[in-house]
Length: 271
Image 1: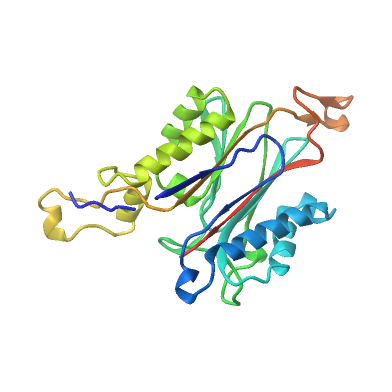
Image 2: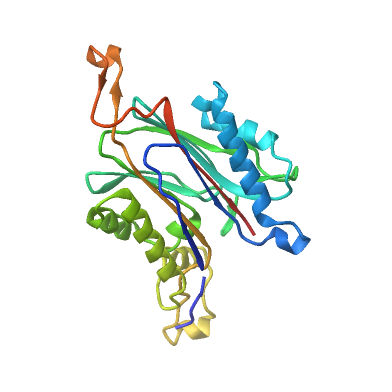
């Protein structure tokens, strides 16, 4: 079999219903003597700063707009911002191929789709006019319940791990920290496994990328993990506030007071 060696760096930063920022970068811009991490870092730093803005703190697309407009570094990045309100509504704005899944009672009940121009060429927020903007973001929302699990990550996670593996790790982990670490480690392991038929290699074959026809006659096919940066965020909904008009008195279910919203945000530099 012909192997497709494709993720070498794994990073883990936990989130438990508090604001966190997760950053990734690769080396596309290094070829132009540009530090590939500066754009994504500044974009996320600006996103964090604008959480104090009343309008931006309640709308991930507006937050992305203001953070992008304030970013002066050169570069580009895929980005996802998700805000969890006290009422359980998760608002999402995503540009590119970062992913987010919601797991409820052992099943994936919600997942966002990647945005790409063509295979392996995702939408990107950029310092250049040719890039995408907040207006191109995939914007959606989903109502969550107490106990729901949010798994978000870069394409380096979802290109190397199948949904069933995610579900197994979540069910076997004692907490979100342990789950995130285990997912990052499994993605890293798969990414450097040239014999693993990964989600990425399967998608590549479905798009027409494969070994030459004569190798197919010998039983060969394109396989392997995808070498890429890997970031994983796992969170569990602990508190849901039932609005008065939906359930009589305002009720705060199990958990601690978490403020107006929890925010997940990360950006990944792209080739």
